[in-house]
Length: 81
Image 1: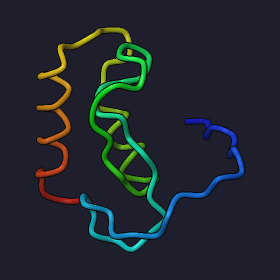
Image 2: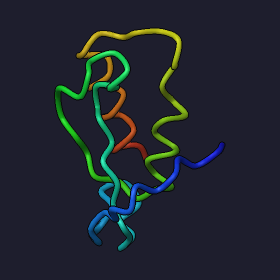
Image 3: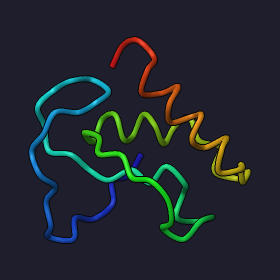
């Protein structure tokens, strides 16, 4: 998967809530911006976990807000990182 170009801003160091590693964290919009235009919750994840989260989202299908929230909760509580 091609990485997006960096806009010059770096995320802050922190502990990823998924893998528990200390890394630079990125914003993951629980409600995809392509469907919900940036509204809703944001979860800070390391780049690897962020990419893993994106893989489980079906890009062609729009889910309900509750379905996206359930996916995020399931991802964050699933064992492994």
